[in-house]
Image (cartoon, rainbow, N blue to C red; front, side):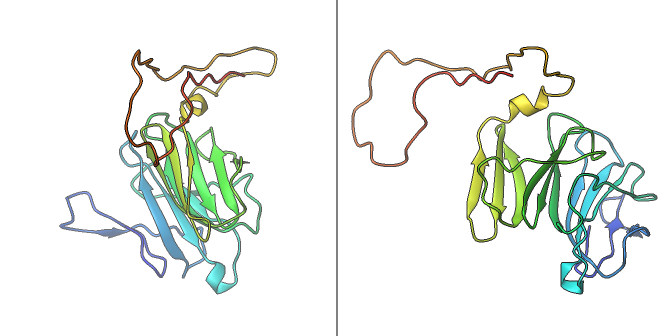
Length: 200
């Protein structure tokens, strides 16, 4: 659990007792905007700490693998003046992380060792939270509403590919209906019929 003034606490007994595991390698007083417990390994977690209201615009993402006894800063590749608001772990692919910064989206394929901008057609805007739902990446932003990237499953297969090879990513099941539908078709609008194929 993260607090608005910097501390992070952890419980191992369902909330009966709590231990202060605040990172010692991050300046105090920042707002813990996000704590992301790992879905893949017990004791592993990530946290995003925001300090721009204190005049510190550096990005702070920290990772622990031992219930918060030790924290490592993992921001290599994120510009030094891009505060981070949220960090999320992919629920399927361990080591695939998403970070929402004050200026857009970043991803890491190596559990935070390196980060790359993943802006696509997302306007430059603060990303306030990230969710993965049914293989879609969903962002909430400040001033730009919601942004959704359909079917991020190719990102989960990306590791190990090189530019010299051709690769066809796994496809989602597609269905063809023999009969047309009738009735009102005003909203919502759906993607065009067909099979979506991703390749590299």
